[in-house]
Amino acid sequence: MFDIKDLFSGGKQLAGLDIGSSCIKLAEIQDSPQGRILSLFSQAPLAKGVIVDGSVVKPEVLTATIKELFQQSGCKRKKIVTSLSGHAVIAKKATFAQMDEEELRALIHDEAGKYLPFDDMSTVDYDFQILGENPYNPSQMEVLIVAAKKEIIEGYTDAIQAAGLIPVIMDVDSFALETMYEENYEIDESDMVVLINIGASITNLNAVKGGVSIFTRDFTIGGNSITEALAANLSVSFEEAENFKINGMGDDEQARKSFRDGLIAYADPICSEIERSIDYFRSTFGAETINKILLSGGGGMIPDLVAELGRRLGIETEIINPFKKVQLDKKALAPVSAESIGPIAAVGVGLALRKIGDK
Image (cartoon, rainbow, N blue to C red):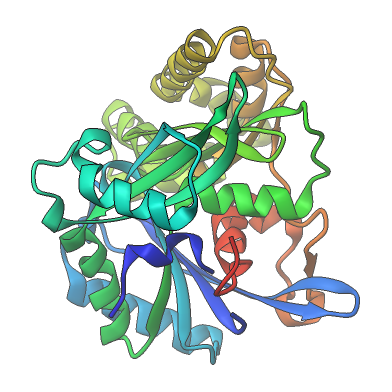
């Protein structure tokens, strides 16, 4: 039986399945003497309304899309790592007296209601990870507790199983991004980096210090909000506006540049919410110096968004690169390039890096 207790467990031959609200991505990583290699990456659009607020609303459509994706990609792996995000999952950091893992599990089981905002804990699956000693009190330790409603987890796992696959790990988008970051970047103990993934309907933030997550937040604004604003302003369909957002508008380069220059105004709600999240993080955790913002997701590819966020936050901002150390199998993935898939592949790469039994 599948359980979110596998959240922090992670074997060989797993495929990462990143299920977003507008697209699903499939990634496969091979270990080789030369290092880790992305041997497969494929994606398929997901109809609007299949995933709403992080929950599966139309499981039969999701199952059909997963089947189609596996068929077109040629992926033979059956064991799947996938993830939750947004309101579907709660991640909370708590402080406990020093104790072993078994004692902590029993304590959280008995007192979970103190730490998690659920009235009936029998409807919830949860897991935890001990992060380490409390920096201000060595007799205490920091613990990350992650929980989700069983019905939400089952919505994903049932759809995946119906596609003939085996879901073995349920991760969280923010932590999958962290896994990818740790695999690819040199991490100094004092480094503070904020990983931001702008999806179609959800944006995930994860502040990571020295390779340890210390703050996460998800909010339900994403790239679709820009498309909807464009559609309303231009009096075109959502699909037409999405095409303009990706490919630009106008017949000549000057017209396309003018459109790109104006496009950033439609991203203001996302930028403002990111600003508020960073301000809240700074006020809650003190005057932490953020060294860098690393941006991913389809929304992160909007022209000039990197520069706009860097200007507004006063922090060096760049597009994340999941292929700094993970190599691309250029023969298998041709004509795909690292630059063209990097931002949208980031979560999927993090999922595909998971192994059963890791921490």
